[in-house]
Image (tube, rainbow, N blue to C red; front, side):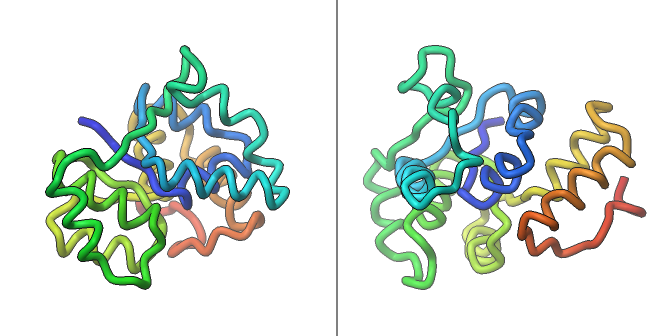
Length: 167
């Protein structure tokens, strides 16, 4: 199953220095070229938690596990053009790609989640990744809760305060 990530989830894991957990969970993920531009804008604005991310991105790095994906099909471009203007380009491009290719979409943005679900796209986010990490025994439940608390301290507006009852 291919997955495409919006900037929000990448940022939540990057800001706590745990992008590696996403690699362990999925081996390979995709970001749209618009999400890549958002990450670059973040670097330009001084978000140092993105430092070194280029080493993870293919084709920038030959060993990259984050694959750049472009809207290259007419249906993707048409869907992108029909997205509500309240969505950022990264969110809209990820939804268009995920819908056309049957991919899973990871985002923490409420509006993007709602639009993706209405388009038939399967959705999860930062909390879902933590739950999956516990289910796959990559993290203990208390370790996942520590990571969630770290994300919240860094500004993540989590829908839950802890993972109790979910893992």
